[in-house]
Length: 305
Image 1 (cartoon, rainbow, N blue to C red):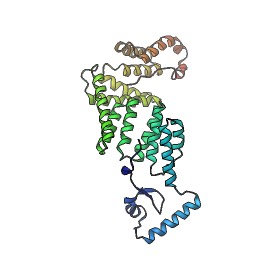
Image 2 (cartoon, rainbow, N blue to C red; image 1 turned 60 degrees about the vertical axis):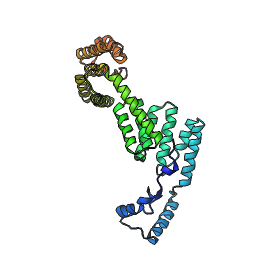
Image 3 (cartoon, rainbow, N blue to C red; image 1 turned 60 degrees about the horizontal axis):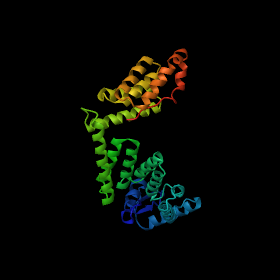
Image 4 (cartoon, rainbow, N blue to C red; image 1 turned 30 degrees about the horizontal axis):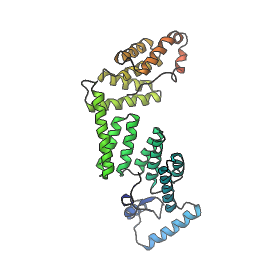
């Protein structure tokens, strides 16, 4: 959803350095960054010389062209031509005052194409481009929830509500929080003794462990999953990933022990099933050739919280 004009901030180009700044903040920017004050004639002269220099370098930002491109992208989205909309919107330069709008529309288009990782990237860009716009935080929160990052999703929804959103965004952010609450209630029904805040803390630790695994930092990952399993005795995924790490380190007995523990908790947990079968099949091969462990990384399954 595009920002309404009444909610848009007015920007201008600094006559000295050319960056886009809020019109109301131009005087402060000139004083703080360039040690200059607005005295009418001096600034006009600076502006004229800056524009001439930019023109010579072909760097003038055509705000009207940016707006037209943004509108074209929105029209393409309305006609469900999402791939074309993305291509058009990506031509808008990063210094455009409305670039956060472009990022938001690109992210929304990727959602329609079921490309959730790409959507997340652009919603994150939109927040960074304009962190004071509530809809960006809501979109990022919804994207986090799609990725399974419940704690991050809740954080973003709460941030949207603190920014005095309009009724539409307020309703969506509150709906997101309500959905997160219901999700936590379902998850915690099978985790006696764990409250919502502890669950979200464990989620963050687990996610950190997955990131360590992605970077092949097995020791870092091991510590995170070990901590999760020490608090949540019923985390099949934590035990499953501990088994996977032991397997990659060649500690086969510990690998078997933890994978079996994972399956005792949840016999249907697919990653542990796959890895347990692979362990059984490869025991002899690993003993003969420990170097074959390096080839296993792409074949093993990793769990998610």
